[in-house]
Image (cartoon, rainbow, N blue to C red):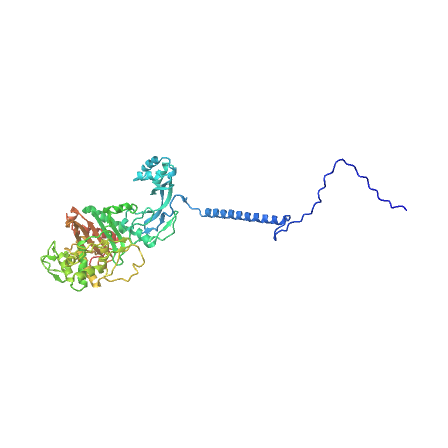
Length: 583
């Protein structure tokens, strides 16, 4: 039996050398476990969405910024101002907008105008000495030393040189062509009437803020607003009680009186007898509101309001009103004035003794010091002081043009002081304060206070009666008698048709060691028309000299009285008064 055939294997192939060992078979790798929530790197679709979202977000932010900038540029373009603001150098809020001031007829007394103010950038100044020298040739009063020091500091980028230049002066500076200089337009106060009523209107400082007079009252009572440009808020004007025509007439007649009688100064007021509204007020030498430095000159003191003086015999109507109001005397009561009157260490006499007893009316008419002193002594010290206090003459008075000079009241106040005060020596008051008290004597006895702003009602206070109506009527009779009677001291104040009445006063001025009989204050307190007084005037001449115009004398009847007549003659028609036939 044969065996199955076996498969033949091919014979081995002979090779030379040994073959390298084969690598082990490749092992299949298994991925490491991923943290929960991790993305598979091989999944590219999720990463693309993330990057796209970030790009869109950044694009939206950039677009929003550009839109905001564009909106801001549009807003600034719409709100563009007329002038450039120097935020890096110029101080802000330096100018204040003020309301206009007008008189009772609507005529402009003060307003804001745009002026040029000169400044420098010291860092851009090429030659300090050249700049200072050329500016000094154009700007009067320039402090060259201070300017040179200011411009020499190159670390500064802003320095004021002169504020409030007129257009013509600004053009001269501009034409110098000096590098480093510039102009800024600011609001400054302008006064179209010049010096007229300068003391009353007052002044402002370089920043347009009120410093004196009515301008200061506007700041304190009404307020002013700081501004950066040239346009301030629209505000109604402040209407004064003054009348420009009456003011001009008063100031002009006072100026002529100073010249005629060679007086060192003069003052006067025209007041509504019923309300205290001041229609005119002047003190000479006057001041220009646009030059506040003039207020520092002693000669330009506002004598009407800022000075306190012993006013002499114009005080006598107060003394007589006091004793008439108390019922102690009547106009026909007689007093023996033939003997001098003792007043402390002084002896009181009359310059022109009558040589006989005088009635109260005659004491007023002859301006008897002895008779007036006797009336005050009859009333007594306490009653006298209380009466003057009630009339508003012992306390400091605040007005819309500022606080008046405080009264100089004697302390102690005894019988001697009462005697001298009765005829106007020993008590010093501001003339404006006295004029208000005198108005109460003739207006029926009602208290008034000086006011300078026109209002519908003078005051919210109830009216206060100071003297009885009968007393006021008697004082009116005496005022008129003193002007109409041939022997009255005020006869030169008479103006036919206007029924003027009043009282003279010639007060010796105090000096070291006593009084100077050659230096006096001549005054005249008046009212018109006396039948029903509407206006009160007060005229004062300071240190008048004997001149041919006054008969070479210095008494008030020869200078202050005729000055009053000249004033009344001019202002009565302006106030709507027609001359009336005398009774």
